[in-house]
Length: 439
Image (cartoon, rainbow, N blue to C red; front, side):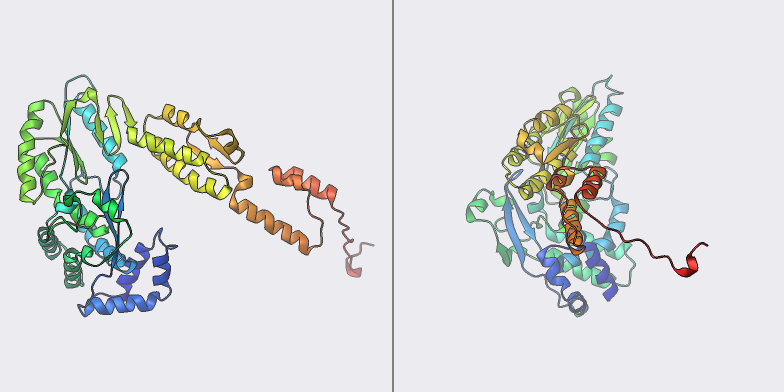
């Protein structure tokens, strides 16, 4: 039986970094009643997901995304909190997506280490390759995934809510959000998607919605058997995977070419196919593109697409005319700078930031070695609020305002001197009691 405490734990986990969104606020207005009704629906086996929001993104390429209702996302986190520790024990160490301590940068670092080890520190020949799964999320057979997850729960999960967890996994995996959703993109955006890239046209029983937490976790678990097969059966010691992008590193081209047909057969047993247009193999000195980076001997560069997006963010900063616009644009610029700092990209960051117009530097400054662009302290919202509160306090004391020059100064000592100079404060003497007088 699902407990109220378990749903509270999932709710608190779900609202992290989401507490100010409209859906979260709406749910929180009656959080106790909503969680109680959710508990009753699950225990009575009447729970059914609500309508999702569907839209199409165009960058870095066209993709169809489904955003579940906040209440349904609580269920997603409830499932994750119970299955993640079990699935983590099953995963290969060379799987990098949707795992704590992993990610794109960890995948790039592992690829770099694999090339160094396979080439004996760049002194021997070795070859690198990447393969990609065709329309991965939209081609996943949901029934196969459900059977795998249910088998995992029955064998490895020992909580009191085992039956409820199996029920929730069944509801989430069998749900078809495309049958009842709110479309927020124009029809023209969907026209840019091939039929195999949309849940509306990919076929019955296939596909998991991009954007849902269980989709990421279960899709990763589906390919776990492939990760182990590449290492144990296909003879490729150095490999890695991020979602559906797989890299291979071997001493000879023949090792890679012999492994590709075996990978294809393994994927077909999972209802998936290799993309015929996304196979790349070269000598390691030519470089390899993996998870947004190009790994070459002794150095790692960002993709040209990332560099272009960074320069576009700088151009958007140059178009700003107000402080609020600048603060919003800085978030985008600093996001790219935070990513680029992990690569050999000082010249890229320098050239990009030097395109900032001089007038913008009235508001901002560059900190460190082209590491971050920060708003000047005197324009920071917190300091402006503190300054206004200070003025209001002086008004209540009937003191004259400090001169306007203080708005352009940061030196507190100068402010104190100006405040003393431009205000007349008559401090009455402290009365001395008769008992305290020193005779």
